[in-house]
Every structure is written in structure tokens, then in C-alpha cells.
Image 1: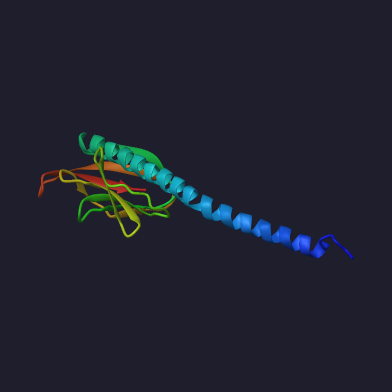
Image 2: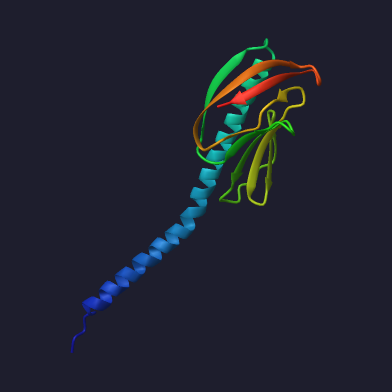
Length: 160
């Protein structure tokens, strides 16, 4: 009578336990990785908006023709200017249950339906162009186009 475990059964059990272990580790680690990515991307969004805002305010305080070129990197999300509402917006679809709201400096943060929105409202500056910046590295040119005499605000043109 053979009292040992057959090689086929032993191999099957090892494969089964390996698959179960990978599944358990993936289930446990994925939320941590998603939250880490969301936190890093959110911080990057805050940094980019603060850099752009500082540059807009600097250029707006100077004479017509003043210009700055800055570089930003976006690993994810959408960055765009809405001249109709006079907002600088950054949106990012969250992969975790990251909770953030309120304000950091001039940047406001909200979350709605797993989408993070960071924004800055410009009441005293006329953003004269609607523009969208894709993921990756972007060069942003911010130019003072003079004063909009209708609303008595500096006109800022933003291009890539």
C-alpha cells in the first residue's frame, strides 16, 4: 500500500495555494497602492495649481507684455482654464476612498462621485482663453495682454 501523496496531488495543492496567496495579497495590497497613488496625484495637482496661480498673479501685477513660461508635470487628471467662469480647474478620478475637502492656500478642493476637483476662482483677473493641458509634461506660457477696460481687470492669456 502506497502511503505517500501522489506527485500530481502535491503539485495541484501547491498551485492552488500559490493562486490563493496571490489573490489574498492582491486584494490586501491594491487599496493601499491606490490610496498612495491618489495621495501623490492630489499633491501634484495642488502643487501645479499653486505654481500656475503664483505665476498668473505675478504676471497680472506687471505691465502689458509681461510673460512667464513654466513647466508642469501631470501624471494623471485634467487641467484646464474656464474663462467663462474664470476658474483654473484640475480634476482627477480617484481610485480609493481618499477624503479631502476645504481649502489649501487659494486652492479649493471638493470630491463628488469619486472625482476630485481642485480649483481657483479669479475675480480680479480676466482669463481670456479656454485651454486644456493633457497628462505628461506641459509648457505653459502666461502673458499679460493689458487691461480689459470693460471690466477693469488685467487680461491674462494662457497658452501652451
